[in-house]
Length: 398
Ligand SMILES: *Cc1c(COP(=O)(O)O)cnc(C)c1O
Image 1: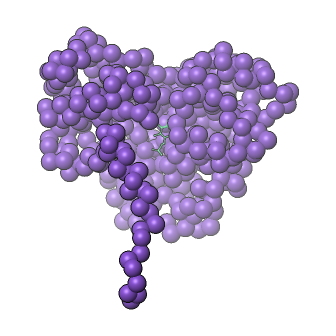
Image 2: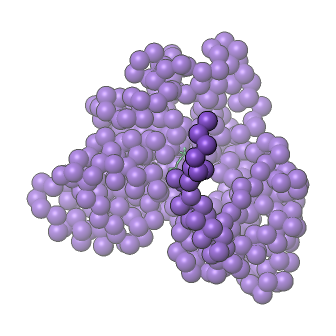
């Protein structure tokens, strides 16, 4: 043991950063669930109606999915012990990709550990520093990270502004390799990317078309096939990313496209090559979820009935719910502190709806984000609306 002066913590600059977050009122402690991820749960010791998860279809605790996960765990163990390209590909991994490709009506699919790694791994694998990405201003962080890793030039167009995207594409040199990319459903506003018009633009200017359907998987299109199916754009989108972590209830991301494109990713996408594959229980859960989407699409109808009921209720109370077209309904307050007061007040009333402020959304667009699921009852939703009414009045928001 050294007896010299105590070592100065070389990470103390991070403590200063945290202190600064505290001064700005942006320091957050994690909300902790005491039970499962369900429509009704216990958070930080309080029983709440849960409007904060992406568990659109309530599949996190679905009995059939749990059974299939347990069977796989018993038979194949808790982990795979390898990356996909060495010894971590089991028959069920191949089966899941085959089923997903069939489901999406594409030639092939590759599954990644998460939607995040699917986006970042794909974009960074296919582009180089000589290429260009044309990207919606509100696209997901994982797309932005993929672009940065690729070192391609990133040209951002204002949210949903197809004319601006076209102007960027028009100005590029002939033969410039370009990726045009949008979210299918935007995660903070719940609006849809203008996929048909973007497909037109991609075709006109010869760009690769990519859509990130994380919030559309299991929610939009027939049986939850996503926005490409919703808009009838089959065959016009080169790269579709979906998630298995939201409506599907488990964990993972997938990329759907042509066989050669998918085989290329198996050779070059770094999360596929350098990070261990899904445990058998996760893969079996996802397979069971595909069966469920195909056999019981009524569950998606219930999600949409609840969505319509809740949106209408919030609007009738006078809240600004923005441009949402999906089960994500933002309650836009504007001011960050007032938004957090609304979220805290709702929590006191037994409703868990997270406040979201800068830098996740623009400074003057802070909001409480709500997501209903297929498993909320009408009583749950009415209870939540009553709480919004009470706290909204108390705070002078409505
Ligand atoms: C959640 C999300 C992802 C990441 O998906 P995970 O499976 O949670 O990693 C990617 N893109 C968008 C638009 C998302 O909302």
